[in-house]
Each structure stands twice: as structure tokens, then as C-alpha cells.
Image 1 (cartoon, rainbow, N blue to C red):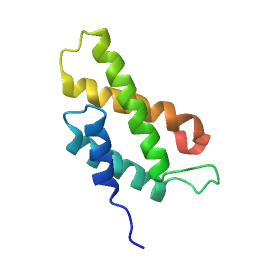
Image 2 (image 1 turned 135 degrees about the vertical axis):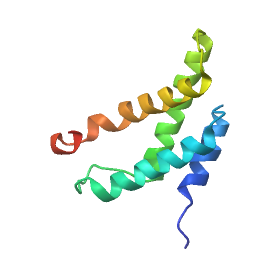
Image 3 (image 1 turned 120 degrees about the vertical axis):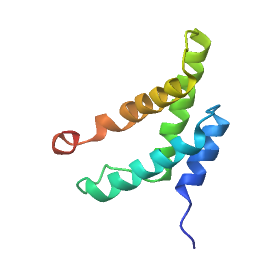
Amino acid sequence: MSKPDNELIAEVLLFAEGFRGARALGRKIASLFGLSRQLLTQQQHYDWGLRAMKTCLNTSGSLLAAARTAGGIEDDSAAEASALIQAIRVNTLSKLTAADAR
């Protein structure tokens, strides 16, 4: 069995959620999840796999759609990055141990 290409999967999911800068953001989130898997402590409740990444990407799409509906978006690339960062924080920060959250 081969290893999934997380960058490509993230890019496609971001494009599907309406992100225009999906290529760069997909590369960054795949790197973030890979580095988190390698550098953070090993905990049973940590999930840095495809399922957790997909959850973050879907949440970021919902946040971006809400921001676009509310209007007032001056810079779309900044709004996209902000939505992705907020989704990552919502979905992963609460699961981190105190040592890893610092």
C-alpha cells in the first residue's frame, strides 16, 4: 500500500471549499501536520493523520464561507489564511498537552 499525498489531498479539499490560494495553503498545512507528528510528544489522543487534517480543512471552508457572507473582506488571501489558522486552533489546540501548547 502506498502513502497518501497529503499535500495534494489538502490542495484539492481547499479548492473544493473555495480557497483561491489552495496550492500554497495545502502545502503549509501538510507540513504543519507532518511536523506536529514528528516533533510533539507522543500522546494516545493525538491525531495528526488525514482525518484530523480533513476536519481542519472542512472547518476552515465553513469559516471562510461565513466571512465571505458577512462581507467586509478586503484581502481574500489574508482571509483564507486567517480562516485556516482559526480552524487549526479550534480543532487542535484543545487536544494539546500543556507542554506541547507552549
